[in-house]
Image 1: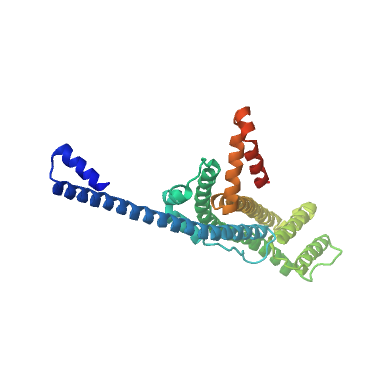
Image 2: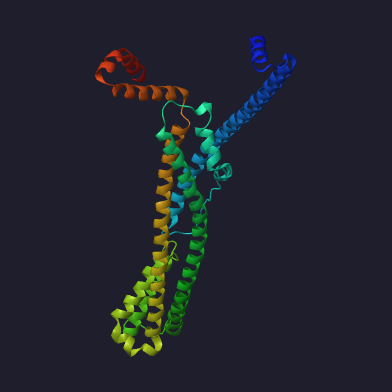
Length: 340
């Protein structure tokens, strides 16, 4: 065949046979070089896509585990966010290296890994897979933002809660100084029959009940103590007016009220952060469920791929005109048997 080509070119262009042979060899070498070069580039791209796809699958599974654990840690931290919590707050911050891997791989590289190349070729456009891929990156962006933000929220909460508690303790300390001065001044000097003695014994009973309670210094239990002292003063206006120089009820009430307001501020602050982490816990659980679904779509088993392809073929066949559908009835029945 090559000899016939050379003979044809010699007759057509009146060129020496040797020259034509040289030209053909050069052209063949050039074309072969291009083909080999393109083949090498194609193989390199194929293996690069395969590596990116494998890295994606490995880190996707790690990401799922981390998101689930972080959701659990959010829930545990949220359970501590109550005014009656005793001791330091325990928060476990999960570092998610998988997020960094996805960020470094990038959207474009992973898009090529899942949608480019002969290994990703399908007869029909897979919108479900495209949607899952896009939603995966939406979830990654969400996690990137929330992970950093949640850690800052915890740090800010602990710092502000400590400040609010310090302010409350300052008011309590000033109120308690007035109470103790009254106790020291009138200790064993009043009888139970005197009006001031009755008032003194009632206050002593409040103090005694408070201090005998387990974990009495918890904010919610201290608030009950503060309200009892306030109510005692309000219920004994006549005695307070008569012995104000000794009881200092006006000053005491101002500190008690200040302590109560600061308790409410601390309680509201804790509740607001509780709502935030309750939302995060729910949101991370939903994100985990969605990511699992996206993973099964992006990385289906071979059996599932074949079955889904046959299902799509079946739907296409059903859309064919009645006569053609009649001719393809046998093929449709076979496909229905397979996809059951």
